[in-house]
Amino acid sequence: MIEALKHQDIVDKVGGKFKLSALIQKRMKEILEGSRPLIDDTKGKTLMEIVVQEILEDKITLEQAAPKETTIDPFAAF
Image (cartoon, rainbow, N blue to C red; front, side, top):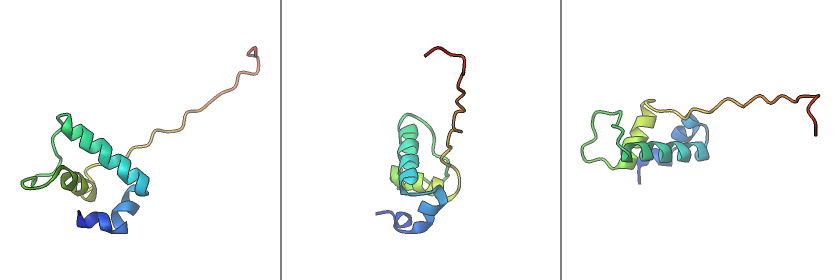
């Protein structure tokens, strides 16, 4: 198991366990689809280790979409 995942630091850095999981899955998919790793030393590392290292080095973050503003038209027919 990757040592960094055993510590709360990486969870706090991303904002929670579920966000960390989503970020890891999203980035692993990107790499599998052809994106290049953002770290230099990838020799002998698994895909998971590469992604975790990218997170630790602040190379990737989880962007959250801003909440959509909803407007209610008071004159709209129901």
